[in-house]
Image (tube, rainbow, N blue to C red):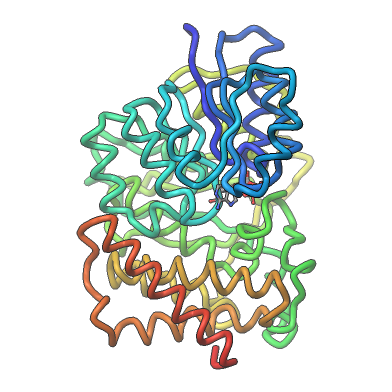
Length: 395
Ligand SMILES: NC(=O)c1ccc[n+]([C@@H]2O[C@H](COP(=O)([O-])OP(=O)(O)OC[C@H]3O[C@@H](n4cnc5c(N)ncnc54)[C@H](OP(=O)(O)O)[C@@H]3O)[C@@H](O)[C@H]2O)c1
């Protein structure tokens, strides 16, 4: 493979660190040459500077302007440019790169990821919220720019590897597997009273706080159904969730002749990241190998939307259309943040999201967003509503 220019948006997060670990292996083994253009973070200036030094990045950017003095201090004596602010993140993402990892968490990743898409290179997409919030507009930008979008979310990366892009009409059903999260076997009362520490203790994956809470509520799987709808153009009624606690099978695609193609792998994000980094080739990495004899049994269950109402809310938003999906995402981000700050209980997350969806449906803003400004307006309105429900204890 020839020299590549690589940027990592959200470099200091769980996916960002795993990406840099795969890149370290690539560099040490000499599998291909690359130069790092931009690395970004929110406020973790010390780690970002260390990464930028280790990879000789051209620019390091923090979203939080208050973190700029620390970033500059940590980069002293290097030629690495330092910048700060949300628009500086977008500018960094817009710098020419042949491969960009989009791993900022939340809707904050939308504008930077779109900037990378508009460059027309390859974008490895971890940030699912930008598709949930603005999927139609996002996919239209992918098409018009000629960018190559490669899914990194393990389920979508799995589907990508077994999806018959020549004959999508032969696909009857796509099942996204879900570990079931830390509360899979808990009672409703115990789930409702769960703490942030309990919610973030995922049984099979090691992830950032927001996606860990989403996994515990099964909202993550709902967001992933919406993500799959946009990435693969699959009709909403053909998308299902299957609980599979071992997280070995990442997704299953069923065809019209009765064949079911499933993708397996150890629950380690470095596997789909390495796939997206090398596609259509394959890298050699040291990720843990799958030992099915040691695992012994793979089990499956139907999801329980009674105990996990966030999944039902996301399924309803998937069926309702783009505006409902934007509102769902924004309200969930506000509710998860409030839960992590111990301002609401775990059980209240679903109540806040449900109340916001219901209240938005009766408002003028409830229409299909036809521009990014429309999405921003919907997102803003939903965040304000969700915050009001939380402040008034009405969730
Ligand atoms: N973790 C996984 O295994 C996994 C798997 C599949 C998909 N994903 C998706 O990948 C995305 C990242 O997840 P993660 O677990 O890696 O999250 P994470 O560990 O919380 O990391 C988030 C990254 O985004 C940065 N960031 C946060 N807020 C920002 C803002 N407002 N502007 C710019 N940068 C910001 C953070 O910087 P600081 O460090 O400075 O805060 C950090 O670099 C999410 O959309 C998630 O759903 C994650």
